[in-house]
Length: 261
Length: 280
Image (cartoon, chains in turn cyan, brown):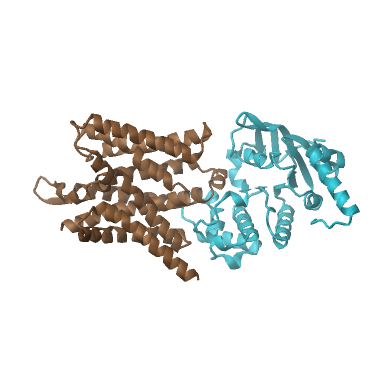
């Protein structure tokens, strides 16, 4: 089930990415409508993060291309914002929360022009939106995982982009942060922004997103959440793993064993 | 007066090392600095074949290019051959250093360079090699001028490139997503490390440069969580090591550059102990 849209904000065309000549993404081809809150879902090693990185031009492509706003990435970079995985950086780096939020302005301002008072006020506002303004002068090494994730989101917000790519923003964060993040994503969507989120929790996917991309090296499905989150397609995406999990769940419930979910 | 020039030379080496070393440490590349300091040897020997000393800026830059080549080889082995980063570093710098050693031995008769000088430098002789203008006015030791010019260049790099260096150091993926050329900043930093290593080589030697690249930066990293303060504290630690090292050497009647390098370790140890006590 791959539903294509007219006038897509994102068009991924025949994308193939390989590591050591071994494909991690195979012939992925989909379109995303503007204003969608999109979940990219699939098992571990499905190539979800690779897909986002490939779309952001961070990886060499074996074939295919991505168009954003109908243009090449380099022409629209200022309208696109990227939130890497929290674990991808060293949080012992000597910087304050404000320093990181201000990095979101580097793209608009360039590396050699002065950071202005306007940039500072935009960064402060971004921190306010993720409820981190009171920690503005805190060293980033002292933050909890959830707070670190919010700082990364604030940095992305400070870019004032129209399109957001987020790599596992819900990974390893507390429930309060997860709630705050999803509120923020819905707020961004209501402002007409488009957001792509790499996500691995099937339970919450139906509540969070309105468009789903199911991925397992190749594209399994792309479309509105109700049409995509079907047992058949999920089975196809997760293969044996999902049925095994379902069996474990069944056994656990039949024997009255509590599960963590 | 000799003491002043020797301490000034040591301080300049320490300052260059402290500033660059801070970024190397945060990039987890302190060992790349180590590798560069060894790998520039063949470049230095070839430069010496053209002149008795590294006085020409062209030769200085030429020798520094060997260091850049080393970082390029390390990156290529790491990315293309999938060799682990530490293995790539180990392979590269020993290879280049070995070539340098063979060159020193082969041209021993033709160049004013021996392995002792390569390893330990001759900081005590710095005040002897001075620049005198045609009018007869003494301008001070050549080494101070070389190191001073590199230091000024480094300050200019840091003032203009502070944001580029800090952004690509903290989050290279994000920097690339913003459209910035992360390779440019990588090689700008590595080029600066190569250049300052070559410039420092005559005074403290190829090996002891590493002490100044790692020690002051590591000490500062223990003491602060702000990048600007880290650079300032590392600089202060570097100068303190140079001054205390000089007088330690005088007292021991030993190697000046050795004592300066030792002091970087002693100051680190003091900072470490102090931090353990404070944190209790």
